[in-house]
Length: 345
Image 1 (cartoon, helix red, strand yellow):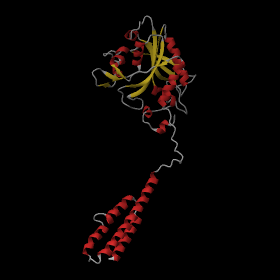
Image 2 (tube, helix red, strand yellow; image 1 turned 180 degrees about the vertical axis):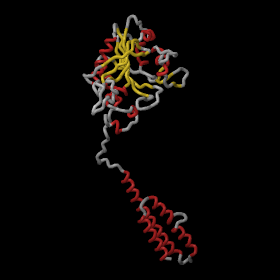
Image 3 (spheres, one colour; image 1 turned 90 degrees about the vertical axis):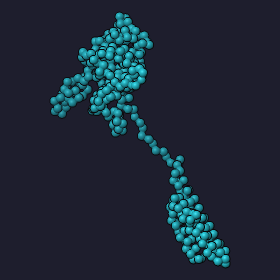
């Protein structure tokens, strides 16, 4: 029996020494010291021994139990210390520097545009993106039956009143005029929403910046002067500008504003043997915004007397300006959060 006990002890110590983690050691504890373990079974077998053999057997089995227990406890303690050391943070190690962030190209463009108009005396004003039909349409001379409303009809919210995501930043102009008396010059940046299918040049959400100037004897020539300064500041001093007649419900007369192509300089011809400029398609001009004199009906809607005040308004898509300024081919790149694209700005 002594040889059998010695063999069990040797095998147990060898297994414990080769165990590499706390899970393996716990399994060995159950194997040898558990209720159905090998050492426990040895105590049960003592009932088969004679009265003379029991004392010596008990001493030997207890010695084996103590040896295995001490070996397991020592190995478990070492394993616990190793795990703690592995998880411990060495505060003396140098930190890992994070990559510096950059301002998004859309935000850069918004800031640049606004800085130009602020330098001309404009005040930046913001308003809610969730609007009522009144401010988004009726206050701006876009009644329910107006055909131009189809292009502006956007995403409606379920509520007792008809709320919708604003389709332009013009509602802020109406809100501002209701609470402020002229003269004033404001610029309104913000997100807007349209029911457009997303492609390389369209998005259901984009950014706009609109301007409004109201005062005594404001003329179309004032509008032209302000926008000419803006175009030269943003695209270069050699930039030329032209106005084309157009229609907007909230301005009368209305005009689209073009600038000379920033790629071909307004020549319309391409480079390296190409007959047409790839940016303007050979036209020499690029449309950048819409503008006009504020429609008298809009003044009446906000409580102004159109016989006493006049004003002009203009609006531009920020993404379009950024695409022209940075030579970007797809509007979706602005919103995909691809760091390879964003790191370029």
